[in-house]
Image: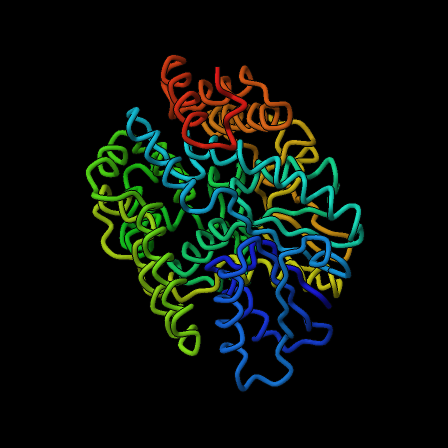
Length: 447
């Protein structure tokens, strides 16, 4: 089988290839095509992958191209992990928001809206090319904002595009381990949107084990989300939120923490990865070693401001070592390609599962996956609080999609003004104007 990776020069691509190297099953991926607009980045990541494959029998063959149609032809699966505007764009997303006293995280709040506005037209263009060149391919979308991008691609690809994220599965795994449950045997009652969901139940052996976890201060203190949100708040909620909800529940404190650091996350990654690609170009024979060193530093500093606010300490090594989105992608591909029934938390059309949203709204919920694709399963309904937040953010997503599709300034303004982390229409207008001035792709939204 052939896998095409869009954004093939991206820093995290070796994680996907490493997962493929570990898959020795029949009918596995044998060919990987890396597509990227940046030849230098492609060459660097290609060098990392070839060194990963050294000594591995029948490792998937890797080819590189800057031609999209060439990359798509013959693909069985297309993994989309593009970053429109690069990390330079992300630094603008963050800094503009912070200068106006608003959180600018890349998928949450103002930064996510700006990111979506410039990404959606490109993602839609990709969906149109997939439909024309590789209509039988399955698209696995990891491009952020993942839920929003997946929903924008569905009109062209239908249910053959599925969004993935490793946050829900990571949360479920950590919660299960905290109470001594084998994560692979548990059912996770999880629902919401991408980066905006809650674990409301953890069933094992026919028993919901979440109440016993919430009752255990020691258990909650043993994993990332327990430390981030604190015992009292988790017990008050009766659920465990996705880590990204820290930006909502502790918005004031997180904003102060981010404003107090020397550089934003985007600036840190830009400097770090620029150094990696430059060094790899000089020393391609050490590409894998350089990548591993850079990755370890990247992972250890993930969401550092939120952990500082919560006094959560350093990230748990078990969390950093565990398989992330690459394992979700591999499980999804195997389930579809070989009709191997799997249960995964994915971004798919609602299909009536959550009554507060319409059937076509892309939500993040547990699904049963087989050769026919991903089918959402029944979960408990959202509480009033959860539904209110989810519906508000879904309205933001859809206004962003509308704005990106037609260049509507009014729709873009609504997207900023309606977001729960932006507290004024005036601020929304200032954000839109600043982004439109500093990001060339958003120039059509200038007043």
